[in-house]
Amino acid sequence: MLGWIFLMLFAALMAGFVQGVTGFGSGIIMMIFLPYLLPINQSAGVSTLTMIVANIMVVWHYRKYLKWQRLVLPFIIYITTAFFSVYLSKSMATGHLKFLLGLLLVVLATYYLIMSIHSIKLKSIPIYVMFVFAIISGFFNGLFGIGGPLMALYFLTIADSKENYLASIQTFFLIDTFCITSIRFASGILTLVNLKFVFVGIIGAVAGTILANHLVKHLNLKIIKLCIYGFIAFSGIYYLITAI
Image (cartoon, rainbow, N blue to C red; front, side, top):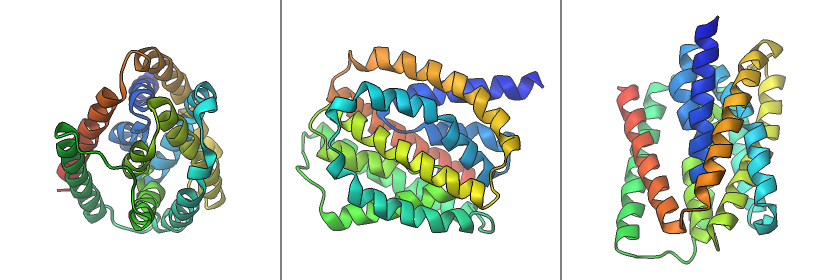
């Protein structure tokens, strides 16, 4: 009894902290631990819903920095893809997909880290790249509850400030939480039984987010970028290892 409560609290605390600092990553952290308690598709649903209060806190905190027009098109592409992959998650083998996701994350993290070290700045992302990012992110979000890394890169590139970045990415994922959770309940992947994990996790996620909010104001955007790139690389390596 106490074992799953401790595991859920710890996972959510770490997830809330990482997401509060980098703007994403809660799903990656949660999916390291939750498959020990639940099937992968249910783990993805619990992971997403656990962060809802923490998401709301960050969105409210940075609300005046949001430029919502930047969210509309990528979200439509993202959620449409996620809708189909949620249903695929019931039957698809995940090993090869996890390997591809891990490889993609490592390549992207290396690319952006090199650009950051050499001070090469992207002024914008071509619309076809945004389409690809949104499709891939939505697909893996539906399968594993992990849609953050590529969308983080997108919003980070177009952000005017760290506050604008955090407002954009957190609002994006808050809307996603409502949509994708509704789909998971409607499809029977999530049930009321799963809510006990969510309620315990919310406590840890809120604590981690509060801690992160106190830290973020002391960091500049370059440090946050390095944290994001490093964490994306770590995530990719983790998924490569676990897919073997």
